Length: 342
Image (cartoon, rainbow, N blue to C red):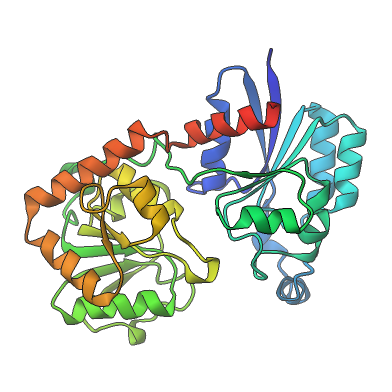
């Protein structure tokens, strides 16, 4: 029996939402089609709409509620999955159920209970969803307390078609040009840790100059700051350092992150903040190297940059763990489909 699923979320190249949609499309017995909820976003973000975002009362400037309803009426899916949209209203969910949707599913890749991620329309709609998927263990009891009927914990993932090791020839002259590489947004703690590495003599490149508050003035003079990268360029960037740095997002209370899975799947030797969830997914010392503070970070990176064989072994072991333990987007999509149909 075939199951039809409408996936409503961002579908720009390199987005994890698009990766999840494609994963559902690989599952036998599932017909998944996507609707991009962010069409022409850059042309409609007025000053007033940005103010409303700050107040957690976002305006539906893109007509997402109407577009979602129209697509459902036209395509008649059994399941509607909305990925991290902040403006869908409970009135729209009631209407979707009236036109025949069997399961209404919300997916959040972020700390959904945190104020900066929880708009008021989303908060008010939570009891109206059949299932709310979260990647955060601590969000499950919080969602129950907010009236969610079925919170579902789903693990972080990597895209097996994208996140893979590249050869020196594929990367080019930048291959392992630096001792360490980080790709991601700015946070003060990350900046301080990267500066500590540079001060110890480690050469570091950071990708994300156009994201947040990364500024050369905040960084040690020896650090190379480059623009953000996505999709294939993102994978290539992780090969520019001998060691890949995995910092968690403090504002999202991270214990593990999507980047964790991606770095490991790419086969790069990963030095990551030591947490219970990191060590549940990867063996510390064999599949990643954990650190608790800047001194531990410096020690771990220094150890690896002087041990080429150890770096290779760590990267290979991390990738093998991803492949053998079901961390891919397709594995996760299959787990979600089973839950949706239960």
